Image (cartoon, rainbow, N blue to C red; front, side, top):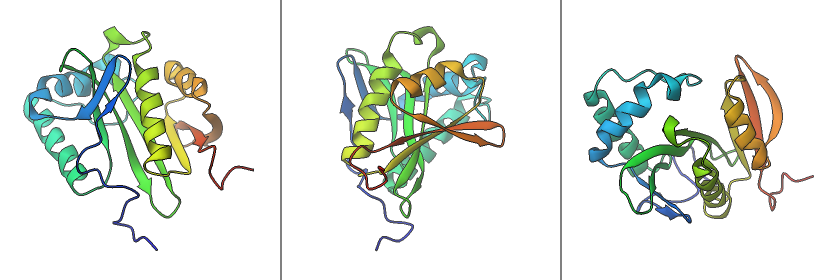
Length: 183
């Protein structure tokens, strides 16, 4: 039986994912200005409960924290880039991983000027596939602000179903089609 510090799969070496237009890769320190933007821009953070970054140094600290978590096999956190450019345009991750319940929560951000172009659809499809096939998750959850209609639409497009409310959030779930959780 796995204990709380064990995970379903190793994140070392980091699992770089590729889609038709995207590379999902580990964050690098040179992503500091893009991470600062994503963690400080009001449009990106409108529905997030994370603290707003105040400067680039906080973004560097965040990158270090994320990469330490990856090294400790706690959670995968991908930087999203376009295939022909290494510039970070968004992030997507699994976090709140529960080994006992074989589930994880998914979270994501995307530069506001690139929203509505199918980029997050590509990224979420690749990450869901990784979660079910490589991590062998039974369940992926998304907890979000009820006013985040773009995210709700994305989740529904990917077969997530509404589970209910939790405090000031709504919860959507996706069950692995080959999971023992299926009815």
